[in-house]
Image (cartoon, rainbow, N blue to C red; front, top):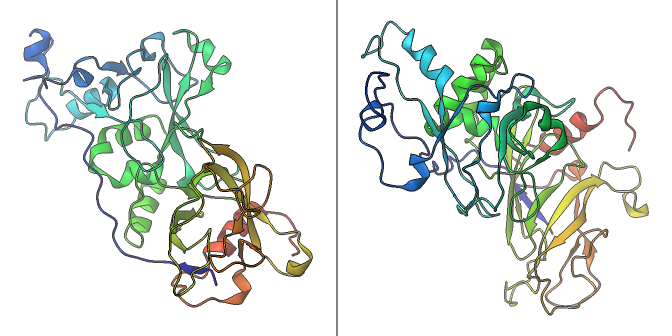
Length: 356
């Protein structure tokens, strides 16, 4: 039996990606301007960013220094100007250096260099029809530095083919993102009401990592490793988000059998309402493979992940494999947040007359 656990435990804080503020003075040279420079080349070659609103981009917002760097740095000039207005500023009249360091990562959140030709614009994306809590920072690859080229570009992808992004929940929750969060406020993406809501929901649930899976609707594509023994994701609504653990999602747990999975492939998947006869009259959710990534390995069993097919759960003891299925009506034990799957369905069919 598939076991789903919903927890409130605090996740480990990710490493801070942004250095502290340092004094800036136009009258000094570049070294004095920002204090002592870090020795790493990723920090030295930072560029200025004036906005994350893709309708207000300037040619100077174009970033061409991301290629082959895992943790590039940008300077947020308007955030610095905003802090200069603060009467509590320790260095009045001196523009503070507001940096933001972000990173490219693999499926496990491990930093890895941005691919070659990673040039374009940082921007904020709010998915259409999604809760405001589902917003995210993205990077748009463009052919040149003209803002008009934004519409001609494509979003940067991670090594496994998912869109590279930093969720708003992570931007708000991690101290290392405080400068870019302030930029979102200055751009008007984070209103006072949304800021208050973020503070409230953060008290009830751990802050997602930058590489976390955050779903606001069915049909969203997300990455998985089919060899994993647990899958962690977040479901977000208008004023809440829930952390969900799926234990043994791709194989059944059988006493006396090794837990080593025969699957070695990774892929992109999505949830969907089941149309199988055995799930008629229920709100059962199944998972479909959208794309396989990397070497599928030597295993050729009928339960292996296949593009376009529903995900099957491997049975170590043998027998016919069964479809991975999640049914809210069953009320499985271990639910501390039984509204997570219904929340996902409600977001998906918002405004529609939904019948199982």
